[in-house]
Amino acid sequence: MREVAIIGVGMVECGELWEKSLRTIWAGAALAALEDAGVDSVDHITVGCMSPGLFVGQEHLASLLADELGMAGVAATRVESACASGGLALRAGIAEVASGLADVVLVSGVEKMTDVDGADATYALGSAADQEWEGFHGITFPGLYAMMARAHMAHHGTTSRQLAAVAAKNHANGLLNPHAQFHLKVSIDDVLASTMVADPLHLLDCSPITDGAAAVLLMPLARAKDLAGRRPVVRVTGSGMATDTITLANREDLARLRAVELAGERAYTMAGKGPRDIHVAEVHDCFTIAEIMATEALGFFAAGEGGTAAEAGSTALGGKLPINTSGGLKAKGHPVGATGVAQVVEIVTQLRGEAGQRQVSGATVGLTQNMGGSGGSSIVHIMEVE
Ligand code: COA
Image (cartoon, rainbow, N blue to C red; front, side, top):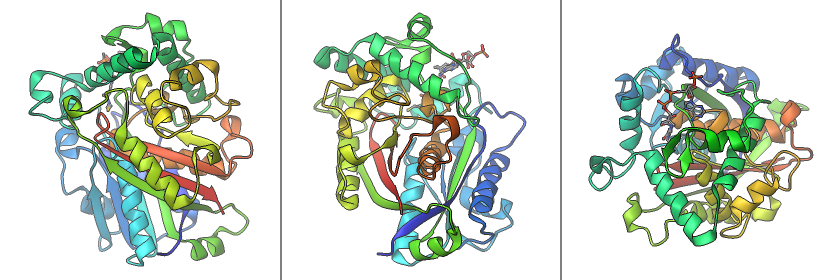
């Protein structure tokens, strides 16, 4: 396999982008990544998008987007693994470059979620749960994660205050990210006082409904080094993917994310690294409990200690292991198909030393963890400065 480098990154500001269409948002991110890399042609485009059919009535997306960029003719593939579609797009792009099928791959993610109202957005998101055993009975994603939070509280004594600490930290980080949906200072008490959505998850424990897009450019490491000049080159050293039962009722333990554990183990093995080698990470905090469970599943903290670590500031900027320096899904926003790629944009920015006020000093090894639905799939990548 050839070694793969990320040579360009780009994303658009996340938010309620009513005046822009899906293709316009996507093109903004794609052009930014191409410009950042100094490249104007690609062999293959991968697009992570969860549900363009339900959100904007558009399928056949990859060809449409290649054409939007004036690149009709290139190979283009859309991949889907619910909210982990962006991570899967990166993995698909890595496979293209590593195998030699393609040299230059534009990896992208996009979702336009606000063209439908809240009920339709909830329905579209719910299609990533088990429709027969969960969706048809009225369960929503806040409800699924609320059950996981209750199990974590029962097994480990995790508290609502610890959940709220995750939201407060990620909103503080989001204040430093110009691409974030919310630039909003939020305290632990603000979170606890916000509307209850699905007990024990308050409004401010939830990620929002977001429009957004992100893109990164891949090429073989040797070629990237020639092109980069004095700029740091970031190499993808580990990629792991795993699945779990989608139906929560079929899981042995609701307080564990088995797909994240397996994807993490696979990525660590491929990279020859372990949890202690990671300097900065973006994990899938679609709800505050998800960040706590992911940091345990990835081995950053022992089972049951993720909440205590968040409350103690271990995962804040300046802490032992800064998590979600971008603001995470909570504050940066969660345009579902774009999220996995946006996480990579943040880690590459950190590893290049270009993260400004939210820079983690000396970061040379970073990790992204993207999750589909309530943990039915997960994808982990490890990146290092060359
Ligand atoms: N965090 C912070 N503020 C939020 C927010 C969030 N998650 N969601 C909405 N808001 C704000 C809005 O900006 C708005 O503020 P304003 O009145 O100042 O303009 C206000 O809260 C009401 O927004 P609205 O869109 O009416 O909220 P809602 O009640 O329809 O939706 C949720 C709130 C939590 C139900 C919705 O954001 C949601 O479903 N989130 C989860 C998304 C999800 O499941 N993703 C997939 C995960 S696997």
